[in-house]
Image (cartoon, rainbow, N blue to C red; front, top):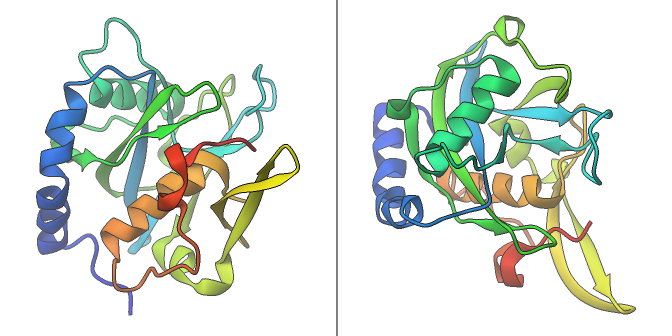
Length: 214
């Protein structure tokens, strides 16, 4: 059964669990931050994703991601980076009061630190968003119930030098495949929101740095 992740008690539990790590992570420098928007769409709890523009430079163009980007020297901390980037990419204004806390950092190929910022953004009408076409091709949501169904969960094995290196999760059967760092952050989120329901057969947490070498 899907827990009431957006209840007052559910939010309090998550904020309490994240409080200590959040305080430490906000005080540390990082390369980038993403917002993990927990929302209600037509009354259904869901996570909000973006499809990066195919016109962007770099190897991650066209990939599914959470809104976010590189830290700017003018940003106070990673929370402000995530909120600023979300506003610039989607026209979605999220206040600091809506931030529940910071999830475990992940690392890209260059070992750059990316900090996920979990926020409850409430009821959301996707038609009200204003995606920046230079950065975002599409905005979509995946209900938590969908993400928690085992038939929608998979994994990808990664190799180095012809030898098995590690395994990362992948989420299937939505409008787009969720994998790489975005899938790892999604897994962290599900483990926080529904620890008794989300029990995958693999564990990306055991992978050093949960690196995205896709």
